[in-house]
Length: 303
Ligand SMILES: [Zn+2]
Image (cartoon, rainbow, N blue to C red; front, top):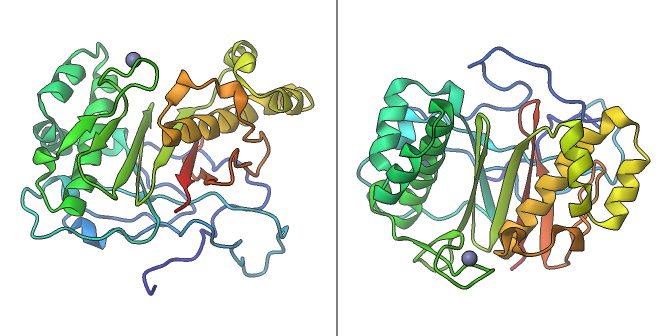
């Protein structure tokens, strides 16, 4: 696989959060993959799951360290502005991960994004009170469409999207899916970030802003008993970050399963430390590298 890239080199062993940066500046310490003006086929794939620890020149690293996966960063006006698709493209490996930043998009990108949405999505977008939330929703769903279109060889505004049966009641309001075999996706957005995973097997992603100390206290009952004990051993100032990375791992896994929070999140142990623990041998669970103030994870079912 000549296109396969090595695991990202950007996360130092101690994984401190990246420094704050000005709005609109490209994220530090990772390659910004610019898709503007080009076809999505030019987007680089992320490192394949299961790749071993990256060799960081000149730096010793623990042998069991698993770096977060590095998503490709999307520059939206390019991929969104492509009404015609010649033929479907294949997935580049078991997983592709993409990150878009809502605040980095200009009015032109928002206009194109709105035009890609269907009636239901436009109605949902229109229901948001805060323009920022509405724009995040529009960018998230347009990004998903712009990424899925080329995989199916259809226009982004003509995707065969449907809703799976709800895991709680069986009604057709479960997670969105494609009427297309062998292609799975997951979408998550929080604050200014949109994260999309495309895969050949069921997949789940989640991105969340850093939890407040109050949220950590009130949500502990949703954690596995082992995770509660792990958090209790941490100094208080480390708990919000540890809780948030634990929570996104859980949500990614439950989204991958297709149950969402219908399944009790306290049932599965995903670990609060630097290294995620997969709750099932059938699933790979990895953290995803996102800008400071957020945590993200992806769960991918093995073949
Ligand atoms: Zn339901």
